[in-house]
Image 1 (tube, rainbow over the protein chains, first blue to last red):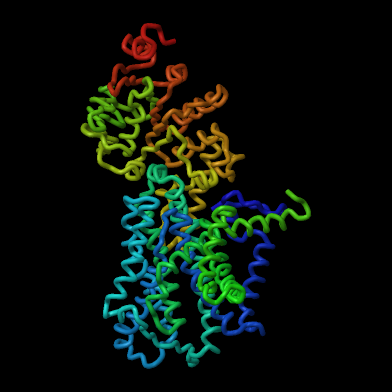
Image 2 (cartoon, rainbow over the protein chains, first blue to last red):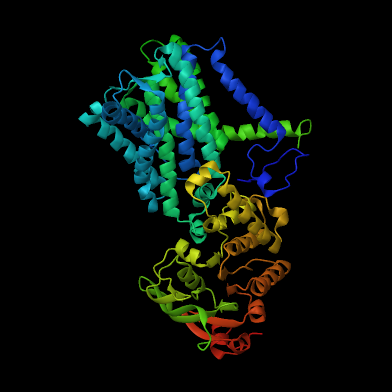
Length: 370
Length: 260
C-alpha cells in the first residue's frame, strides 16, 4: 500500500523491507505509542462514568464490525447493507454454541472461563465468515446496486428468520453466562465497563493489525483491483468472483467477532440489536470515517457514537421549544444523523480520514504551507 | 508458417453476436519469439480476436490452442496464469493505486503465500513481497518508469499510463504479450519509445508479441509477420513486404493505391 505517502525529510528508505513498514518515521512511532498509553489510561480517568464507558465500549465493538464493512465496501467496492445481520450471526453463534454445545460439554456453571472466550470469538467469527461467503456468492454475477439489494435481502431474511425460529427464542432475549476472568466475575457496571474496554480494545488492535497486513499483501491488493477495475483484475490472474466472495467472508469474520463480544458485553442477545437501521448506521460510520481507508474505519464509529449523547441533549433542548404535541425528540436523532451522512457525501466523500490526512500534512510541513 | 512450430494456434474461430459475425473462420498461427502484427480497418475484428484469446469473449466455434492447451472456455484469469498477458486498448489500470502497486498486482500469481501467512505478514509473506518487488523494480527500470514509481496512476499523463499498462502486462512474466494499440493517440517521440520497448521485449526477454496497430509505418517496420483482417475475415498474411503489396489489403485500406 504505497500510495504516494509523503514522509518527512531526513527519513530514507534503504531497502524494500523498510519500504513496507507501516509506521516509518520516529514521530509516527512515538505518537502511536503515546496514543496507546493514553488509551490504556483512559479507564482510570476521573471523568469516566457508566454512560461514557458504554459509549467507548460500544465504539470499540462497532469499530471491529466497521473495519470488516470497510474491507468489503471500501476496499472491494461491494456495497453491503447487511453488516448488522452478520454481527447478529456472530452473536447468535456465540450464544447458541455456549448454550447447546459448550455448556453441556464442559459443564460450565454460572460463569464462563476466559480460555473459552478466546476460543469462542474466532469460532463465532468463522460461522459469520461462512455465512458471509454464502451471502457474497451473488457477487459472482451481481454488481453495484443489485448486489446491495441482495445483501439487504439477507438482512431482512436474518431478522425474519430469527424472529420465527423457536431455537433462537423468536428473537427474544437469550442470556449468555457472565465471564470469569481469572477469579473475578465480570458482573455489574463497575467491572463490565473497564473489562470490556480493555478486552474489546485488545481484540480491536489484533484485528486492526490483521487487516493492515491483509491490505499490504497480495490479498489486499486483489480487493482494490476488483474495486477499481475487475476486468483488468481478471487479466492479471485474479479471480474476481472469488475475491469478492472472500471479501465478504473476511467482512463476516470481523462482524462475527464483534457480535460475539457484543453478546458477552450485554449478557444477552436480542434481535433488535441487529436491525436494518444498525446496518445503515454501520454504513454511515464507514462513510463518515472514510471508505477505503484504514484510519476511516477507526475514526468513524467513535465519531458517530460520541455524537449520540450530544444529539440526545440537543433534542431534549429542542423539545422544550416546540409544543409537546410535536414529538421532536424522537425525530431529532435520525434527522441529524441523516443530515450528517448527506453533508459528508456532498462535501467530504472521502470522510474524516481525509481531514486526518490534511491535519497530518499540515504538521509535517509546518511552518511552511506546502 | 505451417512448417514452423506455432506457439498459439487459432483455428477456424467464429465469433458471432446474434446474427452478426465479428470473426469468420479466422485461422492464425503465432510463432514464439516473434512480433506478429494484426492489422485491419476499424471494426475489422482485431480487438475481438484478442478478446477471444484472452478469454473475455468466448469463441462461438473453432479452437484456440496455446502450447497445446485449449483456451476456448477458459476464464481470463486462468488464461493469464498460462502465460498470456494483455495490455488493453483503452487503459484499464487500477487508477486509485500507485504505479508500483499496479505492477505488484500483476505479480499476484507469483506471490506464493497463503492467506494465513499474509495475516502475520512477517516471514514468508514479507520475503515473497521483497523478491517480487525486486522483479517489479526490474520492469520499472526496463520501462523507464522510475520517476513515477509512487505516483498515483490516475494522475499521470496518457502516454505514461499507456506505458504503465504495457509494463503491467510485462510484469506478469508472460510467454506471449498481446498489445492492443499501444501507440494510439501518441506523439512521434512517445511512439518511438514504445517501438523501442517492443523491440527490446522481443530481443531481451524472448517474449512473443502480438501487436494491433493502426500506424502502418510502424507495423511494416518492426513486424516479423503480418495478418490482415477485414470484416472479421483474414484477407492476407505474410511478411510485411508481401502484405504491403497484396491487392486485397490495398483495396481494404485505400482502394487502389500503394501502402508505403
